[in-house]
Amino acid sequence: MSEPDYKGRALLPMPVIEAARAGDAEAVEQVLRYYEGYINKLCTRTLYDEYSYPHECVDEYMKHLLEIKLIHAIVAMN
Image (cartoon, rainbow, N blue to C red; front, side, top):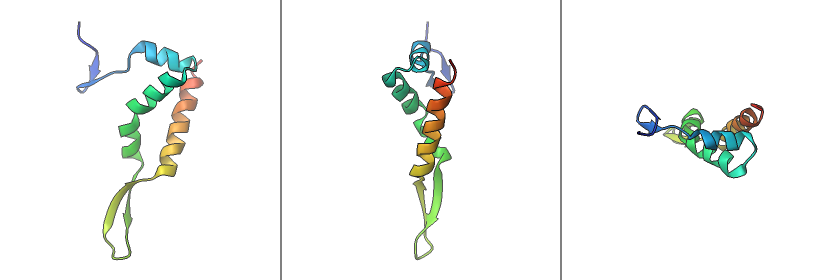
C-alpha cells in the first residue's frame, strides 16, 4: 500500500500528529518543517531598495507569529 499524498506530496503520518498534540517537541518540529514552505509563501513580501528595485523576501516577524499560531493550534486540539 502506498503512502497517502496530497497533490504529490506525502501527508504527515498520523503518529507524528498525535505526538505533536501530546506535546512532543520533535513531532512539533516535524509539523513546522512540513508547513514551512506554505508559511514562507504566506510571509513573502516585496520590498523596494533605494533605487526602486523590487526584492522578494520573507518577513521573519510574520513567519514567527504564524509558527506560534500553528503550535498553539496543535496544542489546543487536546
